[in-house]
Amino acid sequence: MLNRVILIGRLTRDPELRYTPNGTAVASFTVAINRKYNKEETDFIPIVVWAKLAELCANYLGKGRLVAVEGRLQVRTYEAKDGQKRWVTEVIAEDVRFLDKGGTSSGGGSEHQAKPRQDDWNDLGREVSLEDIDIVDPGAEDDEVPF
Image (cartoon, rainbow, N blue to C red; front, side, top):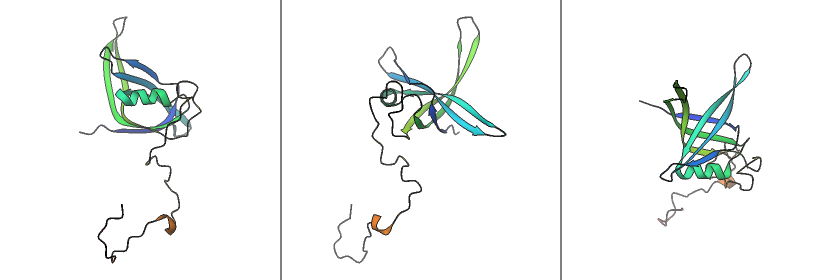
């Protein structure tokens, strides 16, 4: 079986951080994702993040920030106060990547900027020149590994 979701979109509001009774952090936010068919439409996908990643999202993300979310789709039910059975579909995030520079948030993330990770897709499509590449001479006499 396979249950993987990868989304790229913008936060519709600042993340909401809570803690479970045993002290585990959980953050929730919604990501807006545009899609084009006959006209442009937007999907609003609820995201749930746990533990340390939840605290990082609450501290560094805010409304309008561009993120990539990778995780799994979860469908759960609960009984509402009026006795009706409700269904909730959400993405449980296992990885959240901050895709823009920050500083555009309106809440918790406005005073912090996330340090970009080495593999944040910043160089995707960038032209590479030979000066950027370390060329290893296979005929070199020393057996030292160049890294």
